[in-house]
Length: 545
Image (cartoon, rainbow, N blue to C red; front, side):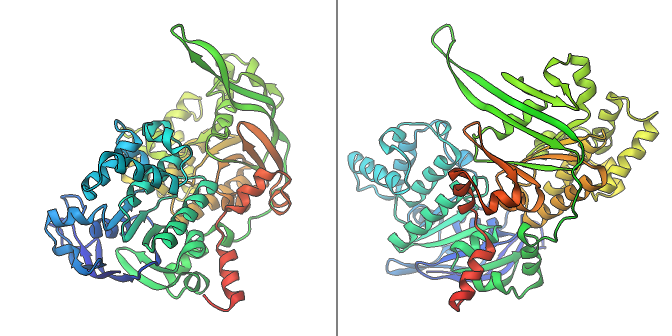
């Protein structure tokens, strides 16, 4: 179906290739996974196949043969008009972030019908509309007739991803390239999207090139897998066989970095209670009419109660929109609660004035999901770390604050010369360490970690988790860990709180909740988690990989 031979990709005026000598084949109806960390060349390979590399790149060398419909074509030698006929018709592509891939000023129906206008010009407007509604039904978008006339911003992340899949499939391509289509999605929506792609593949006889960094996904849906490292393929084979018995050291390293394979954590004695949340509520008014009067309320957080002890990790889990981030912000008073109580060391925070709150806030810190947007790009790391200390009166002078910053950098495994660099000079994982360091310099009791590993590669995620685990032992830190990654929850947390639609579904010791969940919703969340061990074990039991 697709044969890639000796594919090499370079930037113009640069001799060192970014992708070198990549060769693989995808058979008809096969789901082929391309795995590797950020910067390994996975997405570049897909963009080269589609011939949509940026102008900064030289034309790729090698061969990309696409077979089918009575012909075999080398895509790298086609002229642009011929390649335009291939894109969207014979090869469809789903991108990682649907909101930046969909046109915000066109309706869902207009965007899908545009593909048909280009590749199925024989269809009249009514036939194109029928085909568009049919494909929206195939991707299980609720109420296709209504969604047809809606704009992308009205849809959830999972629904936008379904629209992207519909656009890629509407012309019934031979090959679907899916570039990290589930990375930013909740575990339940990820499971639905993967099942959907797999079902449509079987129904249409379509081949799929799935780009991912999640070996759980590979073991769950892949037929074969190729592993990329620094622009080269280091290993290829059957998906489950490769995951069960990887041959290359880099593949073994990636699988060892999965939360389920990390070394067990040191036990921590639960200390005194540092935080008590009682009946916390955060309601947002729904305003309507010319005078913008409130007609209803969105109950983002509705009657949530728990406590947190020194040295304890409490994971807050649930799907997007369940209220977990709002809960974290309300505890820190970044959002004013509608009702309920938050007590820090038996002090009611809702009764504190601005000065008292400012004094206490150094003890309750936050690390955000996206460190690139939460770090000031114009400040050096030295200023980023020492300014908060100066604001809170920590350190006798600037020299003492610099010494403190250096000690904290050492704790998060960053070199001392990082102080004189800017955020853009660091990788995503390093920026996340800087975010942790910025919280630590104020010597907090509690850190709210808001999806701090969701955008990281598996090996970088493992490093961040182990840093946090070590710090909570050394400093007796209490962590409120907001996440949708159940593997991370199992590895790091002592207890877990499950949220749905702003309310608590259940709370308890992590091991107990995972082994014996009481709520149906918790069971639903756990069943959607792609676990390497489950699929590898099943393959071994059935005698094949």
